[in-house]
Image (cartoon, rainbow, N blue to C red; front, top):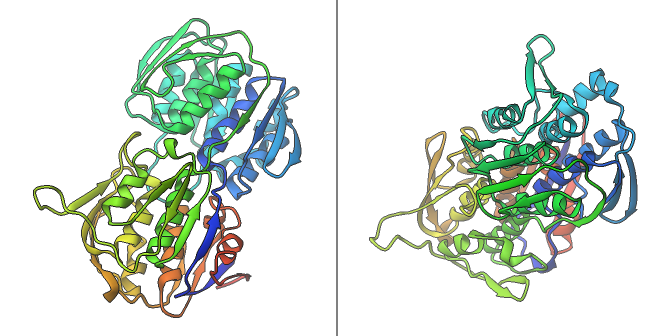
Length: 439
């Protein structure tokens, strides 16, 4: 098991460029299965989840060529559908949450898919109903094998239809879109997720020959086509990494410039940090965070305590609430963090409380943070990362703490953050990576 050893109390300084977006990468990589032509994707992040999905595609028969740093071509001309029956496919896809988005492309192009109950973060129940109900409405038949714990999906013929999604699921919307682009007739998806990464998937599919209208809204209309062809596609910067760097700069009282952030695609994220009192300066397509010795949380106009909650786009992404929570601990003032989507994502706060933060975990979904400003002196700690986003929040806390902290199970952080130790060390941090068979 790998660990980070972090010397706290060091200032960061300089310029950093965010990696390509993890969540977009997982979607567009699955979409390469929709054509036998070559699809070239650039700005791919070099992280575990993305590399594992690329490896899984290669095992399925996709010809993968690495053309440069962050650039790969994919040619899914000869897919081995029998590989889906193997223990190797079961093991690899079960460990990767994004593997569920293989269903839409496989059913659309080959009429058959098989997928185990997928894994990923341990952040609570993440149901797949939206995925399956939507694809069923297109004409697919789902069967669950409880003994082998896998789903078998067949579709002799997909037909476009109208559907109103029960939730604006990002991965569910992506999966249904990829199934619908080759269905006969017109598919209308209402209450579709409209995150920038879903928009990017739609633009890539249109470049491949799909006919998708309504991109950027929650009402998508898809005219099915017989086949798709190759294209080139560039992935957006990762908005979660941008937000993480803003939080690091604020909590360590550092001056940082975050370059090439695709500012227009960040939505409410910059303003949400401003509500915590953090100065976020837009400079063209860059963000500059000046050094602040303190920052004060705003109140609502009526004087009531500020609440920061996640919501479907264009609301605040739930993936950043862990960062907001830890950054608020060093602010002046109080804030309620309301994590609506996942019931286990706030359980890491006991580690922050042990370090000296003043946090009340109200219930599995809500935490009240009593910011102590410069009176907060976090103690170094020995911690374990339970998931990607909690892991980066614990890393931010460790960078701010007095003394040397250790974070175990950093494979979780590596799943979503590319060489984060080396990149932060280049800014002045002191993070050492160690490997051991036991803690």
